[in-house]
Length: 273
Image (cartoon, rainbow, N blue to C red; front, side):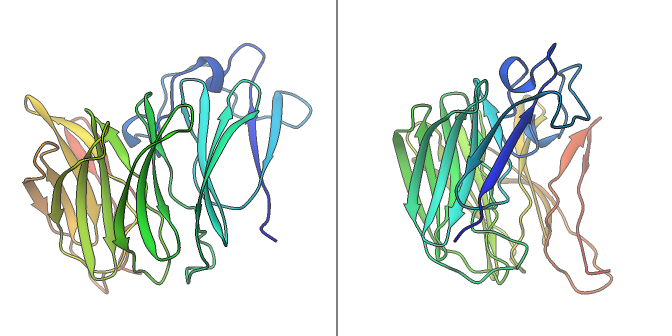
């Protein structure tokens, strides 16, 4: 039997990140920076003070919850099903759950069958789901209706999948980085229409989530993997620039996600040292 997840949202009486604060619409928050402009957010709490609700969820997963328009979205999984769960941030009530059939798969003992994080633009929520064999990108309405689905093909990695899409400027982006294959994909957010596909140099599967940063009069999509850091034109997928990593030893998986600040890009790669 799959273990049960318990999601805790804890708030002070004078403030509420989930119900009154800014959205947290993707992995690591607004544009992946891991920072929030909200103030007076509680840093410590106990079960005796500040816990508004606690909602048990079936399945298991390492998915991070996101917050969009007063709703919480996160992924969960059992050996036979992959789920996207929508929860009311004010009450903890499960508003809807949408599932896909799945199967058992080989993966790292600390990984799960639901390790990716959804993303939302306020209109729809986007999720990359791994059924144990294939990777699937889906878009749902706020009410839980399936808007579109794109089958991305087989996913190969001894550690399993953990991909998180990002959405910006009416486009959804996904770095599909796996053993022996690496591509960056762009889709129209409203229709799911494929916009572009750009191949990258592949090593082993990486789990870094892209981000979008201002560049000149426009923007660029920054992606990190074992092959290095690259920036792409969000409209066409063309490579703007690329920087190789230097590995003293064996190149391994890149897991950390890059961020930008003060005109600089910060990223991390691992070589097993």
